[in-house]
Length: 202
Ligand code: TYD
Image (cartoon, rainbow, N blue to C red; front, side, top):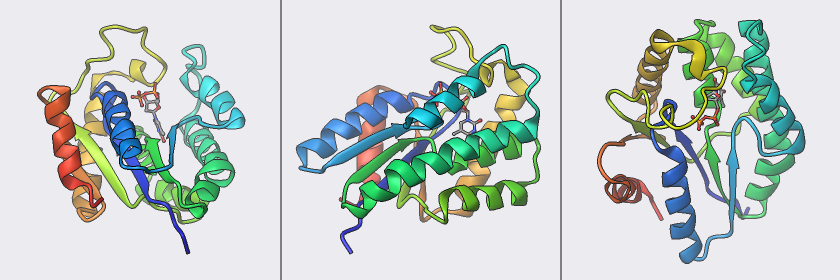
């Protein structure tokens, strides 16, 4: 089967994922890869509509379980509509966040049982896993981004929440060292990118 390669990027808010994804996109294009670059939550019309609900500051009353289910719904749609068909065609897929974010934010961050989050991840993706995940890590990662834009609902959850998310990501990476590559996100964008390239099998 001509299966494409699936890459995801993870990390706390503001660690510079978008910059690194752009660099990787042009690097892989130059190598001749056909590419699909997506963000979570989002990527399809339905998932982008769910994203609006999730990030809207006016939805302060959203329950934690509703939040988790909305992320999973957006993910389920994205997997079915775009990611699985692209991989089946041999396309390389780069996702700006995937299910590890639900484990870090809703599991470790909100405190929802980790096994519950894992089963919902499994249900939403139908068992699809990234081939490789880059976890961008900054020791004190709050945050390059918060400085220059208005905070969304998740970013308003507070420093303790963000620190649990950060610890969560490190735990998740420890549990799956084969798939998840921990990348030091400090230094120039070129330095960070060279650490990513060093981990790429292609
Ligand atoms: P976004 O603006 O895309 O943030 P970033 O650039 O940091 O990726 O907003 C996505 C937010 O949603 C971000 O705060 C992380 C959060 N999130 C979850 O809480 N759970 C999830 O499963 C996913 C995919 C994202």
